[in-house]
Image 1 (cartoon, helix red, strand yellow):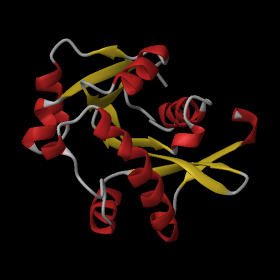
Image 2 (cartoon, one colour):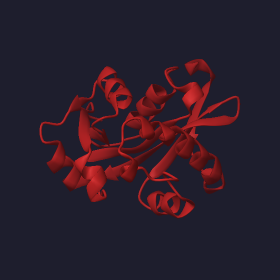
Image 3 (cartoon, one colour):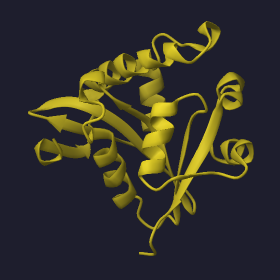
Length: 167
């Protein structure tokens, strides 16, 4: 699968396709989040545009089809990986890992990569640990410092980090 992947920065005209990926993949949240914490859609066009003001969106393509989307936001000595989503039919096939590795390479002079995820999202947590990420010893403080999260999401989330080699 990875040899068929093309990963690159997304452009504004690809917003609709990326939102389709995000909103389809986020349906998984219904398996572990309480109903009152679900957002439908997970992301709107206005939210996408707001996020694009501070980060770069990347996409993973297979045969010209966008199958995964992830954002990279520089934050001083850290780079935040945001909104990592892969279409259900492409999960567990290396797409998310390839996207993540690409973003790590695009992190520039950042000393570490930080990723927040739901504490109950065992799929994401297992993937992060497999990719060398470790749970932050003080996730609430890390989330507060680097992310502007709604209170419900902050309470339900944890942070992972991975040091990057010096450039």
